[in-house]
Image (cartoon, rainbow, N blue to C red; front, side):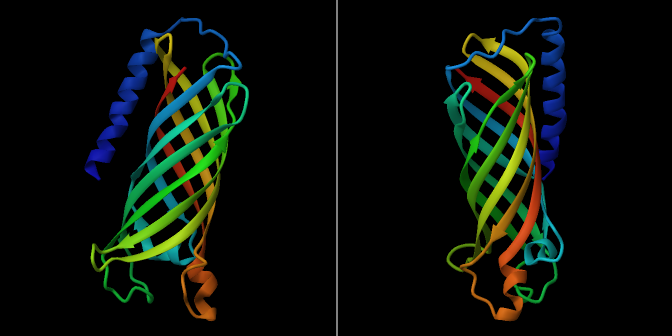
Length: 212
């Protein structure tokens, strides 16, 4: 947890230093019909709305999200992601006090479209689907809850520096809202909606490397 907090001042320092060194530089306009790929690492804050099992049963810690995507400038692209958080298990009637901590793991894919604004800013709306897992304990006695995760996200990118002709480093800030559905979780009818369904949001920030 402490290591994740240390990333924040490092990112701020890096962004400030790079922006200062690039002050006054004129960026070339975004070109169309050019193939590119992106790799980004983000610091992730995940929360669930109260009134559901996920929202009432876990105190989620800061985590990470790794993204890899590719496309052609001017057209929708395809991306893949993996994320993780640790969480403290709060008192609830369904886990019976057997677990003190849990691990959130997720992986999936999304489609996106880059909307350049000026020469430095990019707005990237995303629609995606993933498999969200809540893991309690360790092998061979793990207890896992599986959810499908549907989400929409808006990501802002700010070009920091052109490392070379083919590499550009950007700072990112994203906000996401999603729905979780655990149809495979077997529970009595009275508690089914409470356990199987949840709404949540995420906020993330990090660095993105674009490769042309």
